[in-house]
Image 1: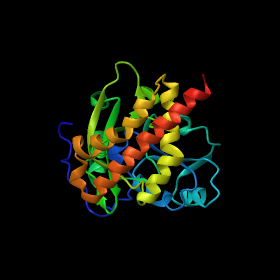
Image 2: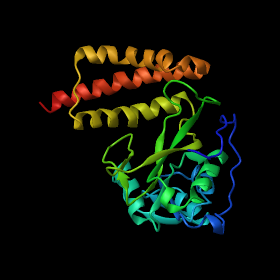
Image 3: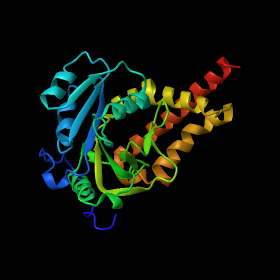
Image 4: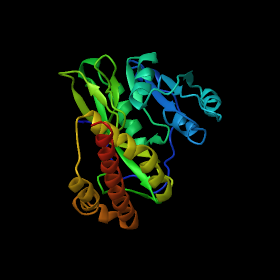
Length: 282
């Protein structure tokens, strides 16, 4: 975006984030920061602090059994409880419940870098007539003690800041995303959204086997996609080559190799589950 602050590479440790509220001259563009949670006591304080500049922080909790809601309230967030309907529907519930039309959607394991915060402040200073309808941000993952550059993990643009009168969360069971209305204008913001999703390769594998592969197969089936024995056989090797070679995973050393190996496991498992779904629904 013209005139936006320059992007710097992500630091090798968590970045110190400003907790200040937006000043008066930035108040024209009112923003609600939304966060959906389920047992995120370890993450929710830092997540709320990361968006403390917003005019409202709204946490929608899926009946957590830990102290998530209490911590969020202590941070000044408005907290609502809604039984889990799925990722997209829960995020849309938060959008609908927000006090302001401009939404910044943050996951509990994400943080806003100072560069991204500066970019948002820059947008908020603009005249309303110059605003886009939505803004994408680059998401950078911290994995195995380093910021990941390759493997298809970066820049991994996500549309997270948008006017709810011009867009909504699409109906997907996984890899949910904001769908903008026809004719809506979308621009990119400078600065990274910092992602601390996977604690280690064991946690990564667990997430693949319990969430990503089953939900990915379900979404493929819903989309009318089908697989075969041949596709099951080649899906893993193809995913490894794509991640490690074609998308530059080799640049990330052992982390890149691990990501590629688990990408292969993910693809093979997803196709196997899809194949079983096909058999069950003949």
